[in-house]
Image (cartoon, rainbow, N blue to C red):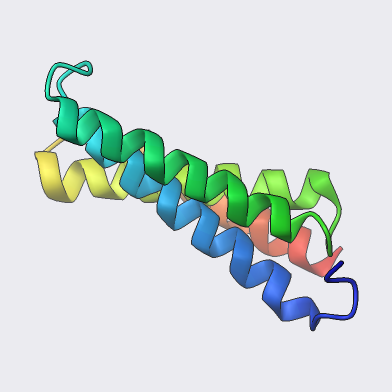
Length: 111
């Protein structure tokens, strides 16, 4: 359906999907295990939106690439979000792992 769309739009869709997933993860943490229903419902809505964007992305790029980018961006974003918003302390090896994820995602884009 979107086969004629510019290639960059599919990459943007993956980035947006990952951002929505990170926000869903933050809402999930704020829901305190689905006790706070408003946050829990928000988390579910944002996960659905993330998958909608991912569904668009895989129409123009390989699923393996899209999913790897989505997962990697989600992990890095959630790690940084947890550190910034919840004061979670990440060990140096966690920061190294996230840097390696970013490098791997950059390499994937060159493939």
